[in-house]
Length: 400
Image 1 (cartoon, rainbow, N blue to C red):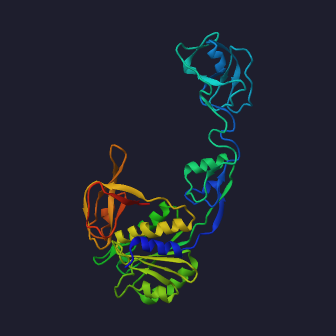
Image 2 (cartoon, rainbow, N blue to C red; image 1 turned 120 degrees about the vertical axis):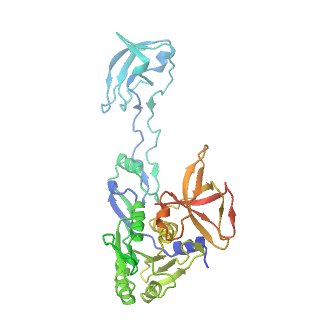
Image 3 (tube, rainbow, N blue to C red; image 1 turned 90 degrees about the vertical axis):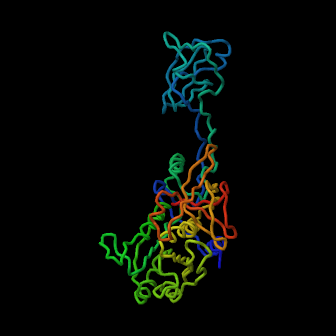
């Protein structure tokens, strides 16, 4: 049976890249850039005052001049002026304003006394460039500010706006079908009978997809009826870019998905991974190269498989540059079955040095979705080892 890393490699080799979409920069948050964002000018584009105060020549201060006379005011948004040539000349200046020609330092209001003249307070020091944000010190014209393959953040939006990017090339949102199955499941609005439960898996999975900015998600539900599965499945395969099923993939008599997916022309590449929870995980590719992820029906299993396999695959197909795994240290010892990989939910904290610590909070069973409340993600404990001591570094995957 495959181990998780082998399963992920198979998925990554099989998936296709998503096409490019050109969108208003304001709508690109969370999407993956398909282009570099390049500086259109120096940043800042001029020597910029970082304090309200007075601009003067450091050379005059170094000659012993401590009393200056203001020859004007430079406000933010004004065209640049020039400082008068006299040694005792200064100019009042506002934060964000262009530094006038001749000014080599800005002294804040707090460090001067103003009467008939602007007098520097005793004991202060002054050096060239003080309180001046030098032109081009952040970025030179033509510099790559945001690289292709990065998920857009709110800070990136500010950079795009500053550089005049009205539209940007990003991944096109994939159309995702999220399918639940089972006669025991009823809608949230229904008062379930003693042998029924309300749907919850699909809502948790959809919320996780939304948190990862995959927003075009349609929900479906199949009863445990083979004819219904056969009838509906082909249409969904034809109208979506990614299919995610939850339940109906194990060895039960009503687990129709594997056989019906094959009948619909989906090539099975994975069925079963040596892991707990989530062993029945299924993956295939349709004739149109649409990825199909069939997750186990137990809530914890489906939620972990989504984060371990589906989201990384969607990010990769979006063009996202692969990030390095997060390493944390166990805050208490853990024991497991050495024959398989174990995924264990954890609560994350930090020690005095800032190191991430993981406190395992294993659920009662893979059906214990309530047990995930208060956890931040899960750790992956590799097969071949029974005990993990406190302080052992392990791979951590946060919930979306």
